[in-house]
Length: 485
Ligand code: NAD
Ligand code: 6OD
Image 1 (cartoon, helix red, strand yellow):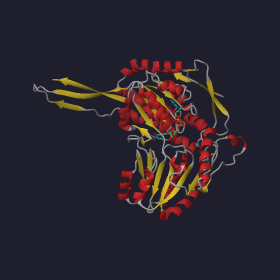
Image 2 (image 1 turned 90 degrees about the vertical axis):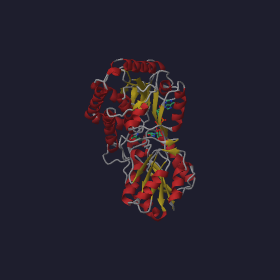
Image 3 (image 1 turned 45 degrees about the horizontal axis):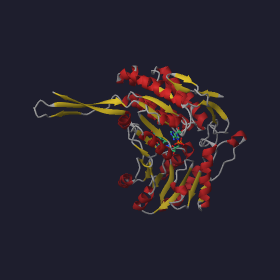
Image 4 (image 1 turned 30 degrees about the vertical axis):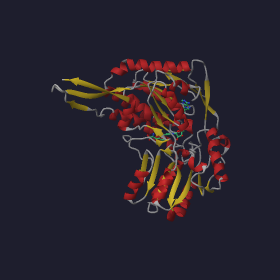
């Protein structure tokens, strides 16, 4: 059994009060690792180490050297890519075809922000003064300080490095709280940090749970200067309350109930391929995933039949089978949640186009968190299945008749993370994209990423934007210097 420890001030350490918990495999619910739980005192040590690093050599490192170190981190991550994939697969049960690009994004997150930080523009003004001598105003960026990074389990390495990369690029020190479900890649990244020569205390990891545990100890710690979080909206609300004490800035990337809108003139093959990925990849555990698909009526029957045929070809299986496309959900607890929506759909009178249950799995896989890829039709827009985030491999397909109608229906949600619009009519694509209440709209694609672009959610899906210079805005503070000439 793996022994996973906290990483504080450059060293792997057990929890100071001896507490530890089991990490279970989603494949069969058997314990695969014993994880040290960080106590309040451990979190305090991690924050203190981060602060000391900030006041030490890390602070003095010129930006080019800092960027160079991050490139070394990226290089070392690439060298150990197979280890990261193995760790991610073990924690999540995701197929290797999913884990491979996700882990490659880990290194890309460091590379991107090593570049972005060197090109960040600043302000400069020549200011007239009454005596005619004038003044120069310029702004410099300073790191915000110690950043608390609270992470989810669905894309652990990708989402953690999406925040750690820019935070370090900007000269901050971080204390990361991985999800209790996925501790392995944060520990591996600690090994990488040491191997790359990142000064001790710059990157710290504290393991544990949320409320009354490590997550709460970290987000309420008065010496944490800013908090960046990815996870459920309700958790984000709790973190925002914690951050209010001391008026600390937060960046929140939260849940979604994303829509795809497929017009009758869409390239059907592309729309099916994109909708398949967005509904089912990573077993539907993608914040940007599509759980509501609106299809223009003339295409509706054909779209549903084609989507059903494609979904029924998806191989559900363990990562040891290279043909697997759908792994288990993250845990038996999450399986219960997703299955409760499968039951609600039937109770509410849905037509189950495909799936709707638990697949039969051989041997000890029978104990895992498996569910079938599922498609429904026939429910009203306001049913729980169509309004609440399920976070499983499932979607509901609705017919629609008019552009204005579908925009209104797609927007009738508290969430606002992303949407996909499928049409060959570019004018319509621009019109609809402009009207959709979401932070990200893809046209004729899904999850096509350029890491320099603004990423984040509207409404209950988030606060703030990260990506490119937007990340730098969160992870730095602008200071204006006014020089009288
Ligand atoms: P979660 O909110 O349950 O947990 C996220 C993290 O917060 C975990 O590390 C957890 O231990 C910690 N936590 C929980 N309660 C806390 C508290 N009171 N104080 C401090 N920390 C606390 O989310 P999850 O189940 O791990 O992830 C799935 C959710 O994340 C989904 O809702 C999904 O949509 C969302 N998500 C959003 C994005 C995005 O970019 N918008 C990306 C990925 C996932
Ligand atoms: O691509 C990204 O930067 C990102 N934050 C993706 C989020 C995926 C959610 O599951």
